[in-house]
Image 1: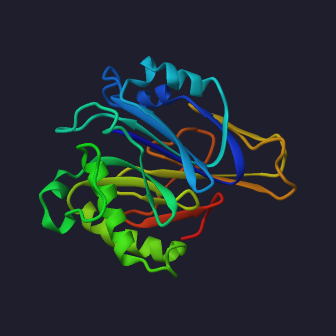
Image 2: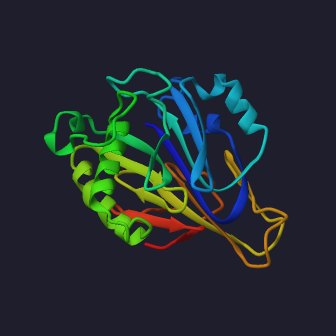
Image 3: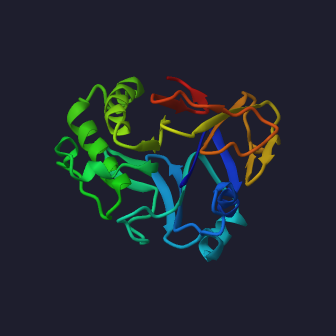
Length: 261
């Protein structure tokens, strides 16, 4: 099973977490991760770093774990390679592609191999660089967005959610389909199996969220208004905060640390 992590916040926050700790959630901990990746939003773009190596063997990840990076939206993925998709950089998530003048990032947990041979999921405009069902699905969804959303709907999260929900429901019938996707402004989540969410609010400038592999500093420059942070993970990351499963088989939308749909 792969591990997903997402964060949406009202104001930019300092995020620091260890992907190696996520491996402890796996039923067979002796098997190492086949790759890892983290995407931090940067305006309309993302700072995306990923490697097709076990998290514990990565010097790059060691750098990330020992330094802090500020962002208001984060998507992370810890990979176990599925059948038919070898361990390689192009098969490592998250995936990123430009559409509608913004960079979209996508990470998937599950196995839906039928999309390769089902004509209903053929690709038109976007093409994958790798061989995973996850990237094929990402390209398919971008095709549908490109053809299904007009100029007035491109920045409408409700319209995006309706479109994603329609096609996610179709894909979900073919296998396990948990995913996180973002256009660097909104965070979209779909739960097919395990996917949990926790809300954190702060009024203090130096308030922190700590637990398990995760540490989030709200920031000393936090404005007088409350900070809101929404966390999403395959498995609850702390025991002392309230984690609830996301709505089953339905797109949930987050913006600036709040659930909006």
